[in-house]
Length: 163
Image: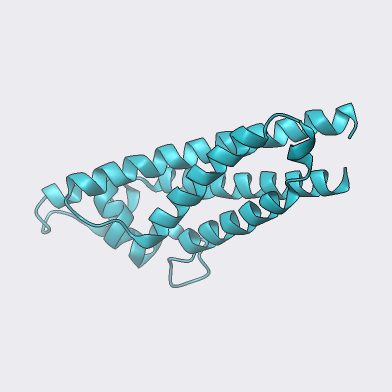
């Protein structure tokens, strides 16, 4: 456990922490909007929120480059797998390859509808184009930071297991 590996380990932990905080904040906003609409949250979103909250806790505990944090590589691998599963669940909502998540039917009927607060507007005036543009950047940011966090957990697990 050299000085270089300790510094890199802290950087990976900071990446994990920042990514998880961003995902929790963005999903928290969506849960707030869903709550205002008196609707129920989708299980995929709840899973991603819970995994990200657990990642915050563990990354804060493991950020100090002590000896115990270098033996925690199974936790790194577990969170890598859980993050990839959350990413896959949120990406695999379209009927196609999942690459156009803002054009999927699930996005129109759920995320875009609640993010754009279209439950307040009569259904006649709401078009698919309007719903498709509501919150698409936020949706993609959640997917991006889930993936970045997963890669940070994976690299941290590789670094720790080889140290």
